[in-house]
Image (cartoon, rainbow, N blue to C red; front, side, top):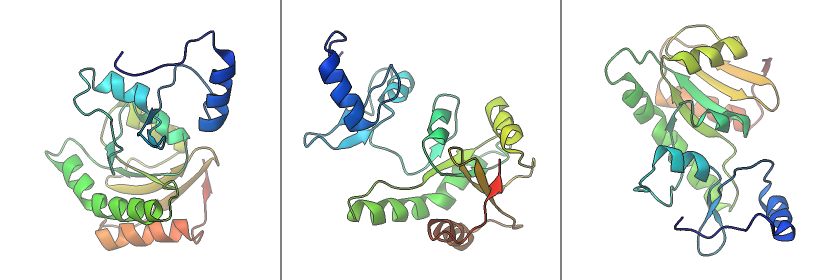
Amino acid sequence: MPWLSVPYPDEGRRSRLNRLYGIQGIPTLIVLDVKGDVITRQGRVEVLNDTECKEFPWHPKPVLELTDSNAVQLNEGPCLVLFVDSDDDGESEAAKQLIQPIAEKIIAQYKAKDEETPLLFFVAGEDDMTDSLRDYTNLPEAAPLLTILDMSARAKYVMDVEEITPPIVETFVNDFLADKLKPEPI
């Protein structure tokens, strides 16, 4: 391993780190910068997806493609999920490009305030995991479909529009962050 770790028998240090970083289960790999600030809480997922560590230290990407390995992040807080029909060539990439400027803007706003971004951004294509997520959250099979899912609050927000454009996404996100949207139960 090219990084330091806390020996398992060192219960005192492990306990302090668990409290400091909100760790609730093992195995957990949190990557820190030289100042001790969190780069990613998803180090374990990153190692699984990047076994050669080519993207180390795995700075968060503004928009992620929803996969089995990163779906656990849906439970960490509110997530904007843009469901697309990935059978169309390039639709997932086009969807990422559509929401990336908004994601980058929100991330920059909260980083400037030295706060954690209150929303993660995903694009979800057509696969079994996405189908399970739609079933669990009782979402229609429509694509594209713009949603914000808050699993911990068991709430969903669905933007009911025919065409999803950057201004629509930005308004949806800003209304969510301003508590202007009415949640539907999951």
